[in-house]
Image (cartoon, rainbow, N blue to C red; front, side, top):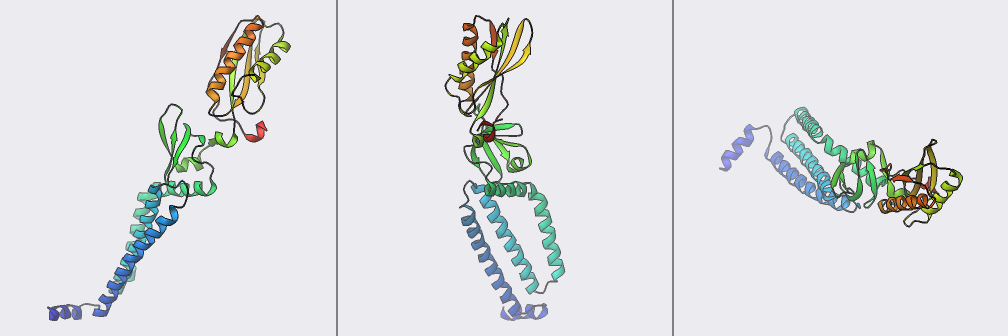
Length: 274
């Protein structure tokens, strides 16, 4: 058996020491890849909000890259031409890039989000057609819980490339109530009375209520009442304001219709209400 192995080594382009060196490189590369994966996992797990899926993805990519480099070194040690090895590495890397570019883009966006922190877990945001409160930040997506209880996954790239609105950052959101009042005789008395009535409701937060004229005709007058509240109290605040406006106009001896239209989501900024 020993004579057979020696004969094969003599007929090959590499010697016994080349085989020993290749085995050493292969074993070292294997252990280095394992240690590198563990180190990357330990380092990335310290990032708050970075989910295990993104951490495992980066750790696997690092290990595969080290193993691929190790195989290339082993083939070179055994006498393989360097140019085909480099060509194979480039082809494999290109295929991996094309296959994983979507995942890599979302993961890269996740790293930017973790660094800049435009959003945090618990924030109420709107991005694209999705809106809700953030319940999880992962390496590839953001998990939202909408107001009707649905769970929505938004790719990280959308938070960086699209229009992102954060209600929690501003502290208050603006809502609107519209009222049509019939046969108004004295707007100078009615509008301040409505403001006082709205200002006396509970749940408001931020700037004082405002009343704007939309349409004035001999038969009716359209009013828009704007007010501010916290994001969590916006529904109750709109309900209370509708009741207060209707009661105040009724006390003035006028007939009206009051409606709460869906407000624009998260239009408040801190400097506008300060």
